[in-house]
Image 1 (cartoon, rainbow, N blue to C red):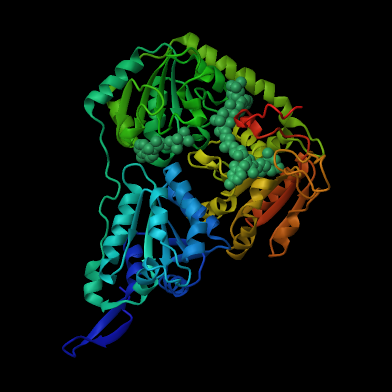
Image 2 (cartoon, protein in one colour; image 1 turned 60 degrees about the vertical axis):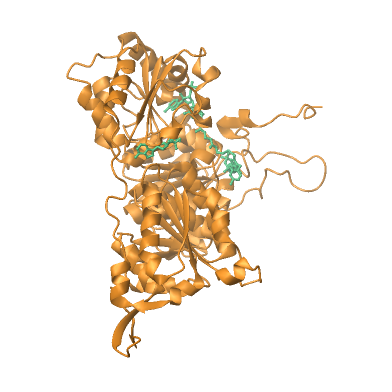
Length: 577
Ligand code: OXT
Ligand code: ADP
Ligand code: MG
């Protein structure tokens, strides 16, 4: 408890005092929150200083959006809410994209923002950075709270923590008006007002009948498939998930951030037979994955004949069931409890899936892997994606502990397929929205929360959304190696604007040297023009643990429009006239 001053009560008796600043800090510490990601300024500058003095780690960013993404991925990695701290109005708005991103991706996060005074805001009298932040945040997050009295800080924070991590995790907004920080109260009463949240994310046990129904559906399957989503990675029920796959003998398809829950090299991994398993499976068990656009909504030609399959879905959110197609066996609960219940009820002799199904999946996988293998070996200069990623694939294989952050279009889609992951929660990427800009925030939080080395593989456009944070990486001396796949632009660097002197909308300055950027802050910059050079440079960076930025020169003609999701671009009938 950090009471700060002496004062006297109404009867003139000496007493220890505390204030809003210290109560927020004490409440965070009491609940095991160790790190705050943010940008200082009015009214939270002193709060940051005091938090640091009180032993919290306060990571100061160059832009709130990156601090917010850092907090969101800290939530994913730790199952505790990641905390982002912003100033009012513009700072708050900068952090809001990340709060919405956390909610969309089901990551627990709390955006704490200082705000202007209610009396002035509500009368719209033009306060410094005036904005009705609570009203704006509400539709973009799971819950939003404002604390007006110091005595309510403990409850306010407890509500925010519970809302963020219980049930389906998500983003929570906590509004703290400037005046609250300076409010004074008796230190003992303040200490008593704090709440240590007990069992913030209670286990949610599935109904026995739901478990039985799921096993009945699964048992009847001739071509079963398990899809592992990032919810399964978040749940940290790694052993149970692995046991379920291995006991059932069912091929599994990892979603992007579900990769590594079981190694991509596992004999049952169907990652390299994606189209085949989605089209041909007759029973699909979704574990912590939604049937959204990333799974073509569970219907259409990706999924073969209409109504040709039954779905079993394990999810903590009951409303997720039947969101796109009928779910034959919904299992509602937390993944740890649900998967354990399935395992307990499978009995000793679970029948293996028919051998011809396993043969089909295996041979498709081997065919695709063999097709790709020679492309990964080239040492072309300038590099193509396959040559460059072939080099990085070996590095991640040799360093399974490292965390891979990945964004871009071609840089993302090809890295996802080419780089095998061996361990859970090691691949962090653009998630449900396919958002550019997560890169440096994720890399920073991953290094801080796990202490592991980080390799960020970034499209040159993607990197630009958060690139200034290389200064943050250098300032905190983080073991982050950023590799920029520099193909001179968005998707490709070859577009030409035939209508005038301005460059085409998708191209950047040709031959840019991003490696020079980090040198400005004392980091190591390297220009790599071939896969061999790239491999050497990354190994050197990962061995040294020093902040490094490698400009990987990629052939500007190597990529394709929108990577593997070009089909989502609307077409104009006039376009090709
Ligand atoms: O089975 P088949 O035969 O089909 O084969 C599949 C697998 O079986 C096989 N495979 C393998 N083969 C061999 N070996 C192995 N190991 C293996 N593994 C798999 O490979 C194929 C493909 O497998 P995959 O990838 O699993 O399957 P598929 O069909 O692609 O899956 C579908 C999806 C939808 C699940 C998948 O594609 C996916 O997850 N996609 C995510 C896409 C995404 O989110 N993209 C990012 C958004 S794009 C765009 O919006 C961009 N913007 C606009 C923008 C954004 N996003 N955000 C903001 C804030 N502002 C603007 C911008 C600006 S991208 C972008 C920048 C781009 O430029 P950069 O310079 O950054 O990047 P470059 O493109 O590099 O220049
Ligand atoms: P992916 O993009 O990998 O397919 P999604 O983000 O679409 O994954 O889906 C994740 C799902 O996992 C969400 O529906 C969410 O409710 C669910 N989820 C998250 N945590 C848990 C948990 N601990 N137990 C059960 N379901 C969870
Ligand atoms: Mg590019």
